[in-house]
Length: 199
Ligand SMILES: [Fe+2]
Ligand SMILES: [Fe+2]
Image 1 (cartoon, rainbow, N blue to C red):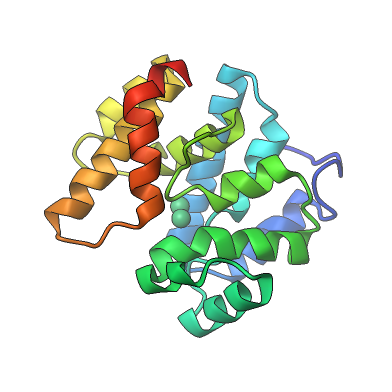
Image 2: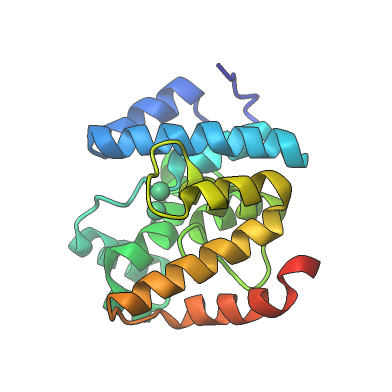
C-alpha cells in the first residue's frame, strides 16, 4: 500500500490508520477504508495527488463518533460558527475533524483541510481534491442506497456532474424526511445547479 512522503503529515500511514481506527466502530472504519480506496482511484483518474486523497479520506470521519460535548468544545476553541451545533454531528463532524487533523496529525495543507471540512455539505467553490473526497464518501464500495450505481457511473465520466448528482440526492433525501437543511447546503446546491458543468 501507499507510503507517505511526509509532505502533508507528520505521521506514517500506519500510525494514521491506527489512530483513526481507535476513534470509531469497525463498520465505520471499513467505510473509511472504502472511501480511501475510491478517493485514490478518482485522484489517479482525474490527476490529483493520491497521497493527499489518501490522507483526507482517512481523516474525513475522524470526529464522527465524538460526543457532542467534545464537538462543542472543539468548535468553541477554534472559533467556528456555533450555528452548526444546531444541526448535530452530521454537520459538525467535518469541521471538527479539520481542527483535529491540524492538532493530531500536523496537517497544514489547506486543500486537505478543506476536503475534510466540506466532505458532508460540499461548497460553492470546490477544488479537485474536495470534489474527490465528497464523491468518494458517497460512492465507496460499502454504499448500497438506491441510485448509488448511477452515482458511480457518473463519477467515472464527469466529476462535476457527480458532485451535483450527490447534492441533489442528499437534498431530496433530507426534504423527504422533513429534516432541517443547513444553510450552507442550500448555498452549495444553488451554485452547483447553475454552474456545475462549468465549475
Ligand atoms: Fe462524514
Ligand atoms: Fe464518510
